[in-house]
Length: 241
Figure 1 (cartoon, rainbow, N blue to C red):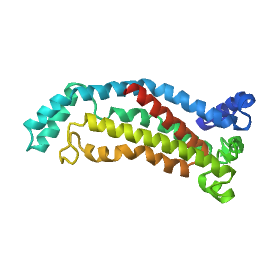
Figure 2 (cartoon, helix red, strand yellow; figure 1 turned 30 degrees about the vertical axis):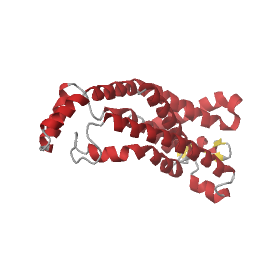
Figure 3 (spheres, helix red, strand yellow; figure 1 turned 30 degrees about the horizontal axis):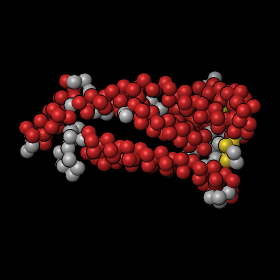
Figure 4 (tube, rainbow, N blue to C red; figure 1 turned 90 degrees about the vertical axis):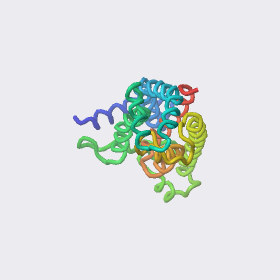
């Protein structure tokens, strides 16, 4: 029995348990609970990432000194900052780990709700819905069935509104943190870490990319993304306060 078959059975059983409370949306509720479970598993890494961020913030005075020392030697500045991070055992990219470790769960849901058969048998998960929207459907299907304001389309509009709200919150918080913690002024050509300058410019907008993901993946996978993104926003607001 494949891992997909095992997980499909788990989702079905969990949906059966939740059916008295959530009715036809029990499978959607099961996905939300699954997402919460995954987030709990990676929470220790999120806490470690927060500690790493605070440690990097504590290094800012020393990095400022390095900037003054190597003001006209960007390559030496970059090397010195990397050596400082290594000396203090602080990774400048440790915050990426919680997100990367969630990718297998996302692709698992994507696979389960994109295939008509699982383990050689009919995929019963495809019959489940979130209100009027099939969990195996996409936004394009909802638009074709009843338009943006049809029964299924309204489910997506609600998800888009939630994602947009969370993305705006993340954007404002990320911009504030970067302005507070960055040792380099905006527009400075020097970089602490190779490629970090480009990443820093894109980072505040990353949460808005979730809108595109929700629009193109099966609704079950979109529900995972929305739940995880909302959890992440609350978690980071608490850990980085």
